[in-house]
Length: 314
Ligand code: BEZ
Ligand code: FE
Image 1 (cartoon, protein in one colour):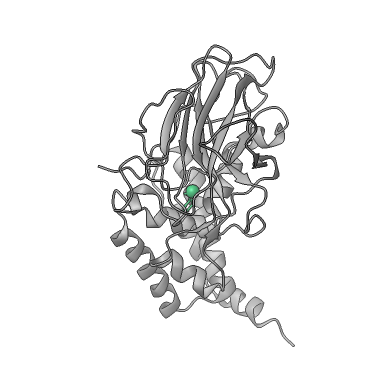
Image 2: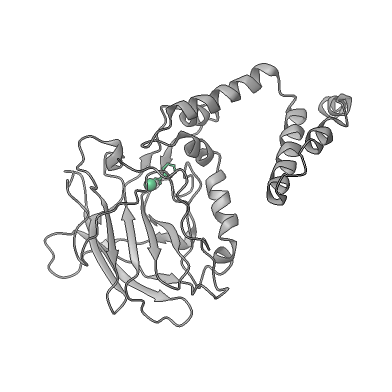
């Protein structure tokens, strides 16, 4: 049988795409040109390859419009649409490629996700981030050291932002029944590089699926669940920032995270709490290895954290 798609592709105006690319004027910045040229080329090739119809294209346009209309300071549907097609995870991998290559030296990165807040309450070593302990919640004690990835020297005064969803699958800004800043905190390491806090052992939850991202998941016959995880950001003077997530190795969905963020080196083991601690049933020891800013051991965001599109609570 003839390759109808191939035949069809060759029927289209062979100069059209190059004309569109060439329309960029001389004041286009080199990086813009580098991005827009291939973007136009790939989008046109894609449309020709699948022979996209006007109706299908308009459905896509409406999906993007709905994502924009749904987005506000508490919800970033555009980011979520990117997440379910793996784009945030891919960009994370590209941006921190060196870190991925040197994964046994420095802690690997993972996507930020849309539920970070920049105003986490500062808490002392050993305090809890739990305000409302749900009946089905397991309290865990998480502790560890932050170390220089090269010298293994403990790092003092590194800030560690932590945030997680509750057992009902909701972050506090999604849930009127949770107190403000529940399950969030910012800790600083002490002179031994140590940090510690009580938190909930994380549980799997679905990403919001009542909008375009959910519709896409449904059309692709996929579930919306993420495996149990805790989000972390570590920032220390002279060190490359780390944005990451750690995943409970016993969790469901490790092999099919709806946003493709799981990395083997970021799976961790919760064990029964040692000693007499009436607060926590389990514990997790987790050390964070940071790369010196001027080393090529691993890379993080050179210019600091990207705050575009972050979801904050007013
Ligand atoms: C999260 O882990 O918080 C998350 C990541 C991507 C999409 C939605 C939620
Ligand atoms: Fe999350």
